[in-house]
Length: 479
Image (tube, rainbow, N blue to C red; front, top):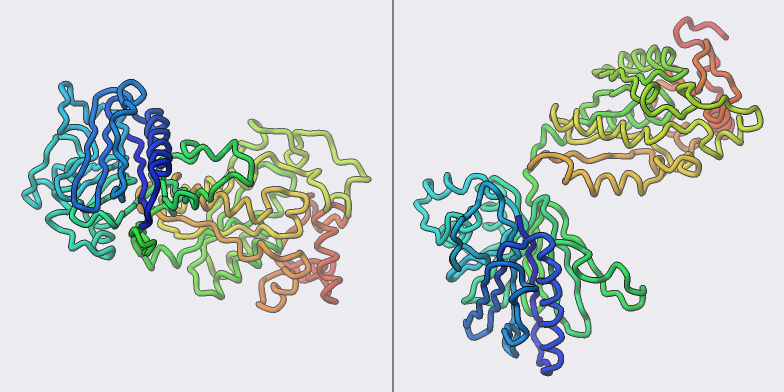
């Protein structure tokens, strides 16, 4: 494992002070990177005349990278670095310069990650590499297969390489174009407008932005997981995804369904959009468990979709601290109704996070491309795990939680709607609202007093519609 870093210096004349500032920034990134790599380091600087300056050494850069070892000059356009932490599986007892990244002769690569099929690639394409270290397979592989286009590099990284990577590639004969690529290994970039330089590195903190005042900060961005980026010294950029397309997986949606209005409308909406829907219901020993299970089974039958049920005592016997699982003090009367709708008195600790984590695991294992949550904008005022940012943040984390090329995303088809808008949508699309259960209690009918009951009643009133839950959906008699 490693840290990679470097920069691309865009075309314009610079003073010696500016060149010194660029090198100082790079030295900071290289030294910070020893946090992820302490066994060896290498720096390669590419100049427009085809000249390459290399600095390679064992140990940490803070111990031996001296100020007189200059590597940024007036005609330098790209610099790349690697700080290596040697994996157990790639241990080299007597390392030489040939065992230190960046690797290359004409094509240079600095790589963070593991190439698991390096020996297979070596045999398949009859490749010669400079070191037994797995990353050393990349320059000869690219030299043999790559036509220097972004499309072709996409194909090689996506379809030929098995393993993890964040990497940079430079052709020393064309040192005006930098390629950056990653799957789940991170790359962060920072553009410095004063220096007109784009820096890259493995961790955001190495760029020194976290403690700066807002007005002193330059934009720091993380490359999208499973993406590839081409940048040249005239600031022309191209990007492509490295995700493999799987139409069958993409059209399968696992809907976390409580049997309530929101998740039922979300399920029907996904069906109408052409997805193959499966409902996922959690029985977690809460007060309305029996009624919810009865309703979700009827909903699945009506929608003609599969139903998966997860039975767990995690919230009841391990986490506790919730009125819904009767492991916290009872709700007071003045906290019901509207008050119950505006504050999370019935909070279940980290419920949606846990539900979505389990759902993601099922989705990865069973080939669902999407997990669907029935969160909504109204309840985001009281429940933080209903806020849209919660789902967005989880989506940003999921590529780091699932295995290679196992793409799972979370959808929130009603996440931007208020409760009355969800009721309106449900009526419009013919969702089986008559089968839904919203009440926190587990009686024969909705209690009419808890927060969800209040929200439900108001939602139908605003739409001038009678709540079909006033009719017992199982007996078709008035209750």
